[in-house]
Length: 145
Image (cartoon, rainbow, N blue to C red; front, side, top):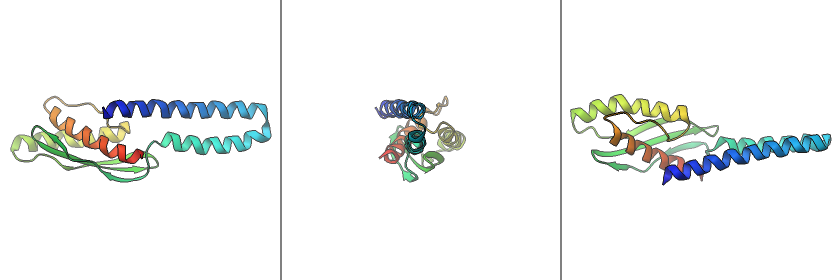
């Protein structure tokens, strides 16, 4: 459900930014004096629409999965994800340690690169992916408020 909401928000935020840009260009053609003030106001509106998230550091809910809990902390700067850190994950056995030490840094990098919780899972680490993306999405939901 969180992914559906995220997709919905991304679609409409992008659509709103495009509408603002179109309105700005129409205004600038009709009146050159109005275009200067319209451009200034539309660029600040567009900037807040495009940025997506409020700056800050957010700690997501601990997400329960088959082998334990996963919890993620995200840092937002200039409206974009700049850092993702997994602060809780299963380490009870050697298999958990091996899998999580190899996939969690990749999941963190992908989340920053995609500026989203929409990342690819790795074979053999699906449960970790489920917990990671669920906790990350709870961070991003906080950052959107």
